[in-house]
Each structure stands twice: as structure tokens, then as C-alpha cells.
Amino acid sequence: RNKRDGVFPEINYNPIEDHKFDPEQWFCYPAKIGSLLAFVYFNVKFMAQGVALCNLFELANENEYRGRKPDLVYVYGYEDGEMNQAFYQDDKNNMLVALLSANDYFDYFGYMKKMCLTLHNVYQLNHGNLPIHGAMVRMKLHDDTVKNIVVMGDSGAGKSETIEQIKGLGAAYIE
Image (tube, rainbow, N blue to C red; front, side, top):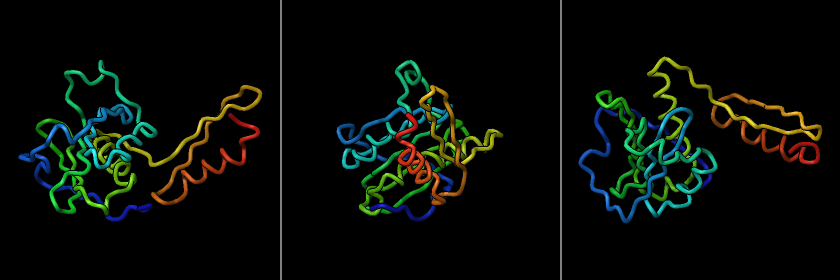
């Protein structure tokens, strides 16, 4: 797949409560999403999407996650025979919990990226912050001047594509 559809609705119950997980079938990527700690669990069948997280979110080091409650928990690829995609605001534990079913329909990195960012944004809004949907590139010019370009807009507006074009067209002039 190369396109994500639908929304990630909020539900009023924890979508992973009472679920069983075989530890041999799951990996956890402890991600730093902005200032938040996210435990992103992904089924081994969706290894490509899980590994691709390192291109988007920095891996938290052991000192940042050991003995600490995450702000966000996302379970990607739960084999329930359904097409569930939802999140829950766990006010008691001050965290967000989300689940996406294992389904060929969801076999696309956009479902990994979008839910992680949705959880981050909902958390930030709940804490009085305004998240901005954008993309950014840091460029080093030949004279060692460093410039940043920030592009903001709705999903699908072409932010990432614009930055890729800047990088491609300016390759001879920027690092």
C-alpha cells in the first residue's frame, strides 16, 4: 500500500486491556516523539514499519526509558481478525494507548507514522500546547552557513515532497 485511509477515533476503553501478547512475536521501539516517551510495540510481521521508525523518531536510550512510564503506548499489528484502529485517553495514568489490528489493509508505514503523531498531538493539546503539523530540513551551504526551512500544512499537502525536491534540486549547493 502507499496510502492511508480513515481516522483514528477515540474510544472510551483501553483497547489493549485483557489482550494476550506472545513476547516472541513483538518488538518495542522506545521512541522519543518530541519531548514524549512512546513505547511502540509492533508485531514481527510488520517489521518493515517498525524498523522504519528510526528514520522518523529518535530511539530513547536506556536511561530515558528504564523504570519510567511511557506517555504513549501504541500496539501495531495485533492479530485479532478485526480492522481496529483507535486510541484511548487513560487519564488515571496520564497516558494515551492505541491499537491497530494486523491486517493487510494497514500494511503501510503511514499507519505507524500517523498514529504516533496523532497520539503526540492529542497529548500536547491535553497539556495546553498547540502542536504544528509540518516538516523541516536543515541545510548546510558551501560557505558553512546553516539554514532551516519549515513547511506547514495539512496532511497530503505536499510538505515532505517539497522538502525532497529542495534537497534534490539543491544537491550541488547544499549538504
